[in-house]
Length: 75
Image (cartoon, rainbow, N blue to C red; front, side, top):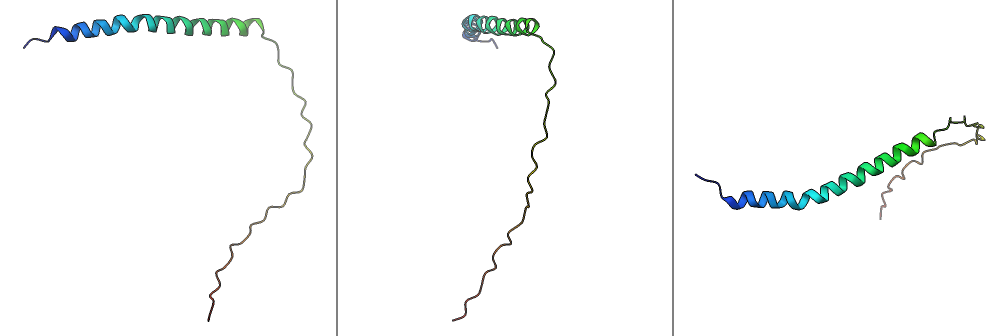
């Protein structure tokens, strides 16, 4: 049993059409990664501690409202 030759041609055609697109995506992604890494190295500064002042505490009371009971109306 032999394999049809059209399948091999179709795989080669698909690879030939997708290769430039994948190369462009790879180059763009790598460039963005490289730019991000170089940007972090140049602007690295020690972080200053944040002075947190305690927030004003409000007295809050949580209550649960009980569900209303159904009343049976007698006629």
